[in-house]
Length: 176
Image (tube, rainbow, N blue to C red; front, side, top):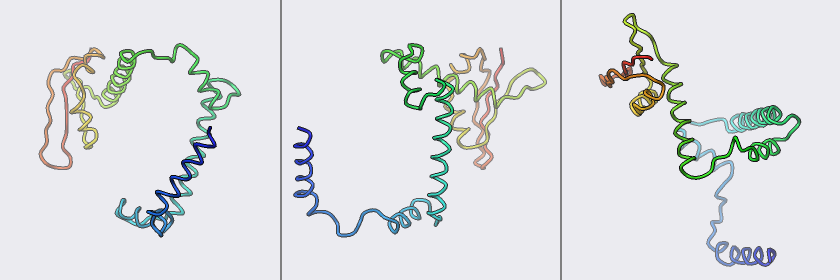
């Protein structure tokens, strides 16, 4: 049955798609050089970039093997994944449970980010400021309930944007 399906697919490719295919390859070094320049707005050394990518893949593979060995000594990455999948502590059942788990992770991440960017003033008020556009976006989208989740009360929240690159988003927060 599988052989018949592959044969049928090959026939469709040969009879329907092959006649419409371009004579020139849609991929390759020359096209990649042009596409990368258009996408990045500059010319890159593709050999150096490829080598860096291969090094990163090797680094990540080694890191995954190290983590797998910590989870199950001597295990491969796949074996560690299987062990985690089988452990009820790492299972989530149902859409509501998944939504709750995702919200908890988002709350923890936001609270950690806020805590890492706080500073106490002499009056005891804790302030938080962000100057990068990404931080400003994160700050302006931080739900008030995240602050309440960690026991903080929001006294005021404002976006001060003078139109300059150094715009600051700040919130006055009273720590628990």
